[in-house]
Image 1 (cartoon, rainbow, N blue to C red):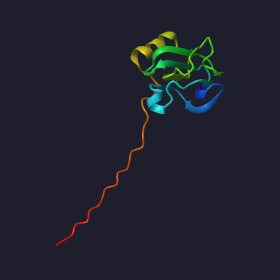
Image 2: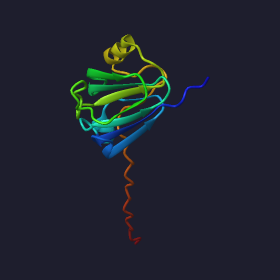
Image 3: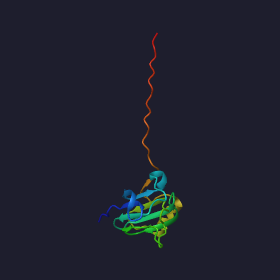
Image 4: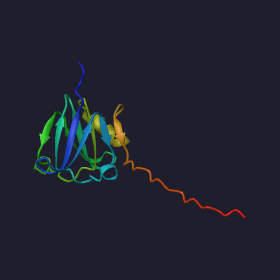
Length: 140
């Protein structure tokens, strides 16, 4: 049986409001600031998929305190007392399987997402097109 592709929508404000980023598939984002200017902004999210795991990390490169969600769910406010993670996410990993605590520890120790997971390392900026000035020379 084929597993559903996991999706997550990250919102800057509680109750699924404000700026939104949407991701599909097995993905890790090492630095939400460099990649999307979304560091310490996440306040709510919608997570969908079968046997999906979403791990939010307090620091870039999957460091700091992790908060783990192992089932599809909608979280309207990461600031509630049992989570206390509002505006604290700097990196995350989402996969379409249930990660063990040992695997999450390995992600943190190695500062890289598990095998088979696409990683966003930094934002790619469009290249600037430099127009060359054509200088006409007089022929004598």
